[in-house]
Length: 79
Image 1 (cartoon, rainbow, N blue to C red):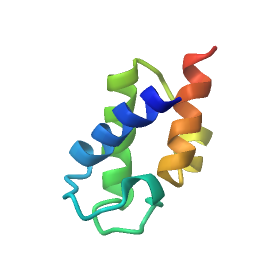
Image 2 (image 1 turned 180 degrees about the vertical axis):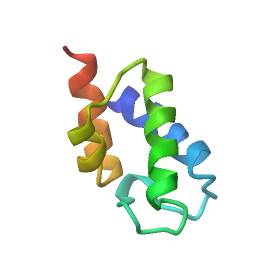
Image 3 (image 1 turned 135 degrees about the vertical axis):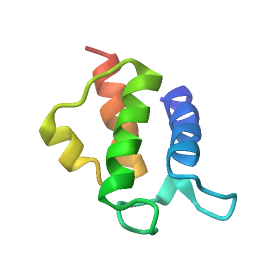
Image 4 (image 1 turned 60 degrees about the vertical axis):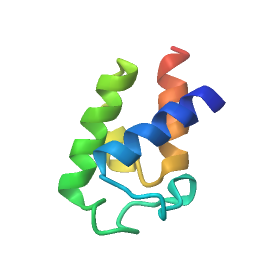
């Protein structure tokens, strides 16, 4: 899971154009301006590309934090 979290952290930083001041590990949807509905869809697409996974609609809606995203990607990779 640590490897997933590390890669996912990089995806969050790039997809949401974050600077070093944002605490990615504790980031939640709409905590920052960049993670709005448009940013969310860009983030989902970037995660799917990076990890070669596909989220269903419920997972896209439920992705409410970095921690939830780590769990989702880990679960999808273990299937």
